Image (tube, rainbow, N blue to C red):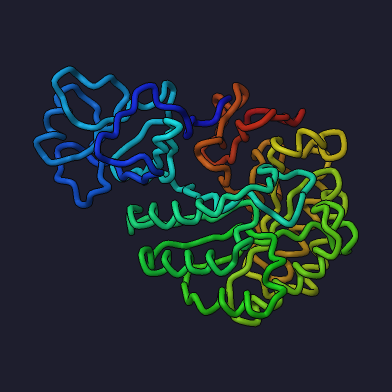
Length: 386
């Protein structure tokens, strides 16, 4: 079980005349004519090199070495790199020789990391925050968005906390609205920035009809939520942020990651949401990805999903009865109570989604979320073919 390799160092990279700064390139078939100066020919066969040169490409990208006599600039993909196709977008970093996949046209799970900075320090964070100067990521995303297929159904912005530099990020949302007006845009944020009225107002002013915020609330009491996110006062700011967004008519999803600290209180948390936030658009009850800080805090957080099925069932019943749209993310069907299975969604991003031998021959595999392949996966004792 290994995630797709989306970042690596090129064994051969020559960008004659193309500069030494960070660059974004869209991959295209060498049989076509480049639509912009940021289109690169994706080399699949030996004869593609001559086609790419003849059709005016400046850059060729492929898995094999460049043949003798071909003068095109080129990048050789790292060994084991994920399969790429027409319309995919890669970031190239000439000074380090690294290549990173930024967007895959065939995927339903495209996301952009906006920053690694965050004002929460969640016990189970899968992307542990770092105090780094990474403002360049927003610039790279803006460049990449201009190359993304307008027919893309959905994009996610994540972090860190995407609203760390909120004015710049709102500008990025405006660009996304203009370039990809039909693409659903979901932002994973801790929601605290929206406690400031000007931030919530600026977000709403973007006016994207398919923009939504995914905001975590981990407990019905402030001290427990604040403990999970390791930030005093976070609960009050988060709830106020949700209220401000909904006051502006914005779409909000509440997210609850399930682990030993949150699962035991889940019925209480769901009842609190049903009473106090019945107007939210969706609630996602989510299995934990065992990576990042979740590994370091394993003794505190790990619980077999079998052992919180009653709490999960009760929480879903409360939300569904209140008319709130609720889903279960990231948990295989075999560990869920049969009454919970209709709420389960295939939610794990394709680049880190995997199945285990027990899944072979399972009649429900086609509808099952499967497992995370990242970090150090842990498995329920209840895994079995249905």
